Length: 441
Image (cartoon, rainbow, N blue to C red; front, top):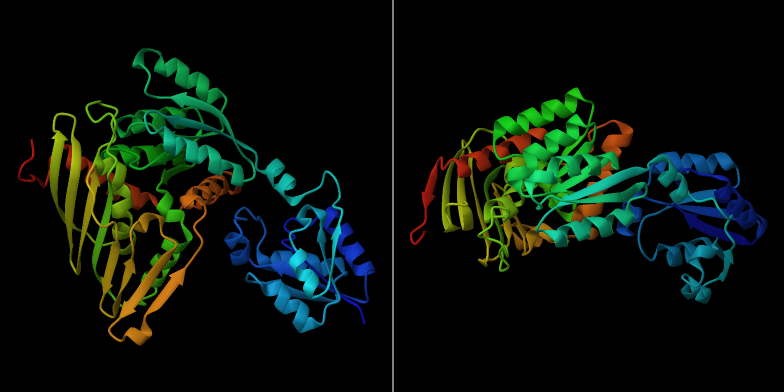
C-alpha cells in the first residue's frame, strides 16, 4: 500500500485546497491529511486564521478525500508522522518548493502546483479589508513598527499618515482630511492630545486604537468609551505587551491559582534613552511612556479598591517631565509597586508573589518569550517558553480588526483597566498622593 501524507491549515477551504487534495489522493492508495493546530499556526506567525481547528477538521472530512485526518501540533512532527504511519510520499503545494527537501531522507517529496488566483490569505484579505490611518508625532520608531507589523495581518492596509506634531492652526482641517481616507486609526500622538483626537475620530465614525494612556483623567476616559458605544464603534487601548504569547500565558496561570493568592506585584520598566524633546510640550515623560505597561499586570490581577503613593523625580517640573517615578499601591490583601524611568536604568523584571510560589519574568519583561514559576521545592519549578512575534503588535492589530469586523470585543485590555490607568494619570498630573523625591527640581 502506498501511503501519501500532506499538511495544511485549510482555513476557509476552497477550490485550490480541493484540487491539491484530489491530486494527493491520486498518488497512492491511502491519503493522510494533517491539519495544523491553532497553537502551531501561531508559533509559525500565522495569526489571522479565521476558522477554529474543529471547523477546519470538519471541512477536510467533508471533502471525502482523506482516509485519515491527524492534527499537526509541533515542529518536527512531519518526520514522526512519516515514520509512524509508514508514509511513502509527502506532498505539498509548490509555494513551499524546496522547504521540505529534508524529508527526502524518509520518503519521496513532491511539490504540486497551486491553483492560480486562489488562496485563503486572499479570501481573508478580501473579506476583512480595513484602511488604517497612523497618527503620530515624535515617536516615529513605534509608528514604523506598526506599519511593518500590519503586513502580517490580512485585510489591514495602512492608507494614510497624520503628523500630529504640526502647528494647531491647520490641524483640525488636516485631521478631517486624513480621516476621510481611513476606516480606523492608530493614535500615537502626545497623551495630552489623545482625548481630543480620539473624540474627533469617533464623532467622524472611525474606530480607534490608541496608545495608552487613552486619556489623562478618568472622566474623559469614561466619556470616550461611552461615545464609542453610542456610535457602535471600537475603542481599544494599545499596550502591545498585553498581546504577547508569554505574557498572556503567565496571566492565565496566575489567575488559575498556580501560585496561590497574589500578595505582591513588583513591575519595573526603564530605558536609558529618554525623550529627545524633554523640554517640549510634545515629549513623552516616564509615567506616560512606561506607566501603563508597568501597571498592566497589577490591574489585571488585583481588582479590589486601592490607595496609592506617587514618588517622582522631575527634569522639567513645569512640563511634568519625570525622569523617574515610583508608585506604591496598597490593596486590602496585597501590595504592588511600579518603577518607571526614561534616561534611568534599573533591572526591568516582573515578580508576582503568591501564597504558594511566585512568577519571575526576567528583563525586559514587557518583551519576554520566557518566564518561570518558582516554588519552595525547586523540583516543582517550571519554565515556560513562547514565541514573541512582533512584540505583540500584530496580535493587537488582529484583535482590533476582529473587534471591528466580527462585532465582539477581542481586546485583552478591558475598559475598566483603561479607567484605572487614566485615574492614576490624573493623580500624577494633579499632584494628588504625590511626593517629590529628594533632589527633584
